[in-house]
Picture 1 (spheres, helix red, strand yellow):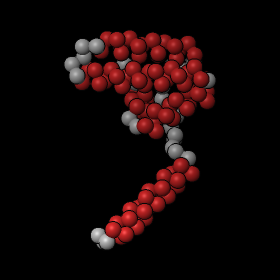
Picture 2 (tube, helix red, strand yellow):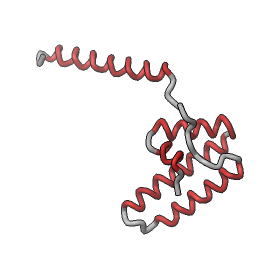
Picture 3 (tube, rainbow, N blue to C red):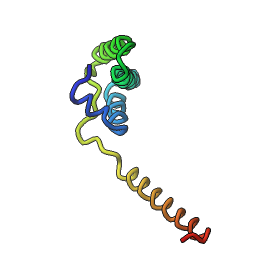
Length: 115
């Protein structure tokens, strides 16, 4: 129900987002929406199968429908292109935010007299 490149995209939050963004850039909003629906159906199918698979056929059918719609739009596979990495400013921003939280934590703990 999932291709190798699609599975790689599902493995991380950034991969899922990159796959949706790639579909949006190349094929428009409808393709990005279908990729999102496909990813949701695949994730729910995996969870359902891990719980015994009583309702798995519903999610399997939904994934098939999404894949059919994607093929019609010209985007047969929901994957992120190779090298889809977060922009440098996002990585820098996250690192600065973590550093700021660490400084704040040390200041609060120091203010309490614990350190």
